[in-house]
Amino acid sequence: MSNVTVTTPPSAASGTLQPLPGSALSRFLSDGWVTTWRNLMKIIRVPEILLFTLIQPIMFVLLFTYVFGAAIEIPGDGYTSFLMAGIFAQTVVFGSTYSGSAMAQDLKDGIIDRFRTLPMNGAAVLVGRTNGDLVINGLSMVVMMLTGWLVGWRVNSSFPEFLAGVGLLLLFAYAFSWVMAFLGMAVKSPEVINNASFLILFPLTFISNAFVPSERLPEPLRIFAEWNPVSSLVQSARELFGNVPPGTPVGDAWTAQNPIATVLIGVAVLLVVFVPLSIRKFASLSR
Image (cartoon, rainbow, N blue to C red):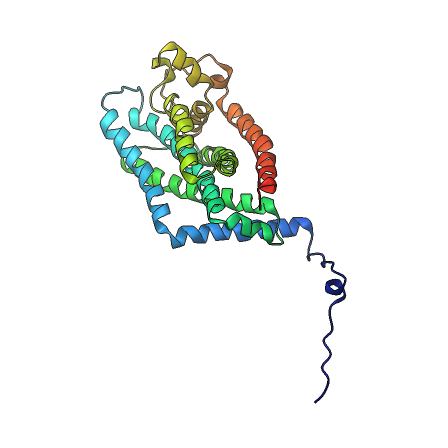
């Protein structure tokens, strides 16, 4: 019988690991794409997630248009034109909460612990999670626009302005999804993040100019609405879509007078603060 010699790689024999191929940036991009694809495949394999996510904006459009539209008088093109930017903002902000609940669920199921044992960039897990939300919000925007078109909503601006409005809505939602991802890692169960997110988001969306002009609110609520970032997002979308009712005052606050700048500043602040916080929180999770 011939002798068989097994050669051990030098790196294994010395107990050291070979460096991973490629640059740090290329590995980060690759890991981010893999985790994004994983989250998209999860949506495909559990289509109920996407189904109920897309039904909600349709329900809100029809509910507010036909139930409240007759009771709220808006000059110009009417309540439907005024409403749609508010529905867009509400839906994308609510859609960003999926990052928090999904992160909390992955923690509960031990998926995050599995990711941490792999030779991958931890930030890529968060990038994949927030990218998945961005795709869902993009699909929701398409469904909402088709529904809005059926009930009479029209874009009265140029095509570049329309694209800028869609991009601004999705950019704000992407930044806010990092906030929810951080909260999802900070709580102990998906149920907690779901309850906490609605306690935060309901006042932000309803005490705003999304569904009624902020000037019609009582004084304390009007002041809150004018400084509410969701109001700035809604007003920005209305301006970019050409849906601002003629003669409607927008408020005296700087945020109300400069809604697009307010949204861009808010997006920058959220990303600068919560991207590092989320990455640090992910790295500190117990194994």
